[in-house]
Image 1: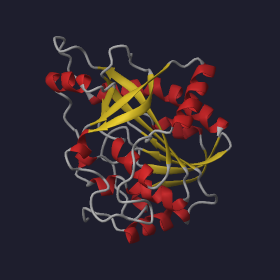
Image 2 (image 1 turned 45 degrees about the vertical axis):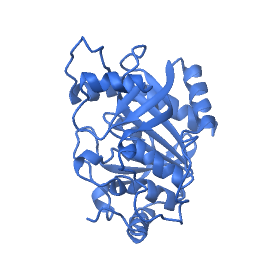
Image 3 (image 1 turned 180 degrees about the vertical axis):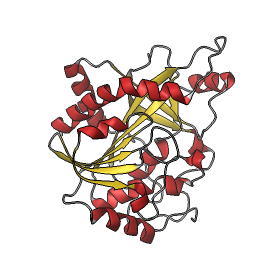
Image 4 (image 1 turned 30 degrees about the vertical axis):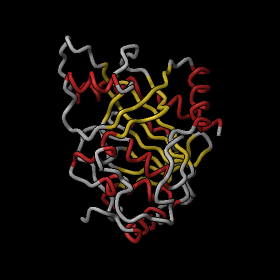
Length: 279
């Protein structure tokens, strides 16, 4: 598979998905590690394994089911990704973000992207939710931007703004939904790293110094491509572990991420459903 996914390949993927749908999805959801159970609440009209979609990247990570679920949730037509592919799995960022382009070709207007993230902010606790206000694209700053290569003018301009990457209006709806349900939420900055190795203590100190509140290995590239195509974005980080201070060495592991997902999934579902009701 080439590094850059062509517009023709994107359209082939979209056609394969569209043939299985009865309605046009308005909202796309991406569910991170351990959060796939959120899709169980969708009144599904179609369930499409990623293997059935030409050119679609497949996830090899535990906690990512690897299928699209289309249907209705809280009166909205949704297209849910149960799991995502990651750059560290060997895909290019163009391949990782192909599903976003497919959603845009299908007519998705709003993207709700979730992740399980490490808490840099010491005020956070495992199982809490952070509304992403902004991100730091450390992968992109090093040259690995998903928009690298020929610009697809059908979607957006060569130099898109990221000034409001995370839609303030959608974030307000999420906060209102959380407050109504008594779900505590934070707001903050998500730092995107390539993975798959976790951060060293020195790297954690650096990420805190530059203003990071959570850190993870996904999301940022998807948001960049979503905004390039004019899709509004709501970002939600579920705190899977709180990274200790430098003198407290604790070995992180993926099992704790999946375990935290069992606590996070119902909270994220409450917020997502509350947002969908308010749209």
